[in-house]
Length: 266
Image (cartoon, rainbow, N blue to C red; front, top):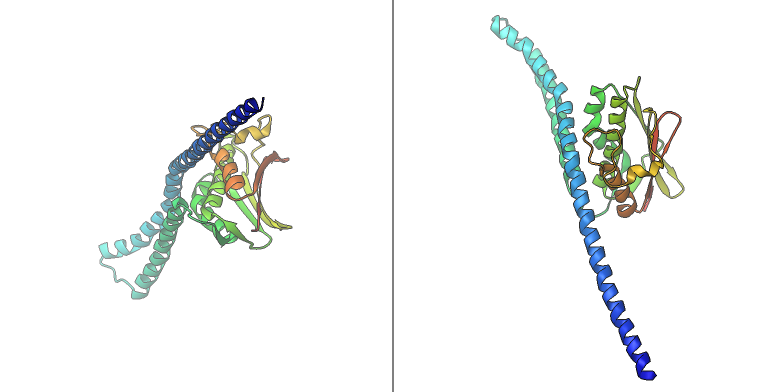
């Protein structure tokens, strides 16, 4: 009888070890899947980012062209050039090229991999994020409002936070364009609530017509977005909840979709 119990115990121990190994294997596989999904999300954003670069640079390039037109005309007509006019043109040109250089830095930083959590000011990161996507919003005459009660500091992966914002804003933009919404707008609000930093993003696109609404966070789920990968919002939720210990939720307001990001200060 005693030997039987010992055998049963040893068999149970063996089974537990096998189970532990299987769990470790599955955890490792899931981590690899998450890494792959993150990479896919970045690649899915690449096409949109390249489109945003073209939007951001089109206007500055037109301005540069317009700066040289009067100078070229005067040279062609053998008209005298005023030194002050040339200096003013050079000054304007420097401002434009600096803006274009800053835009490239913003895109480069967006695709950089955060190696560790850092403390960063939210307003600075939001301005950098908006600089990436503002061209696409202006092209479709989408008004963007940013309301910040304070300029809180956050500890986390700042590029991951930017990616979440870009995913949500781009989805809102696509819906506003596809539904031909009159006077389209997107509003970002940031405030502190107890020990949390809250970011909300809402639009007037008419809302998300999916039941249950949380289904939009499922992997590979697409809704109305033509050519969408279906991983943007899934990855956004994963980033906020797994990487930043926060919470990402969505509901429909009276005018459209309403996303809320809650992240602890520390």
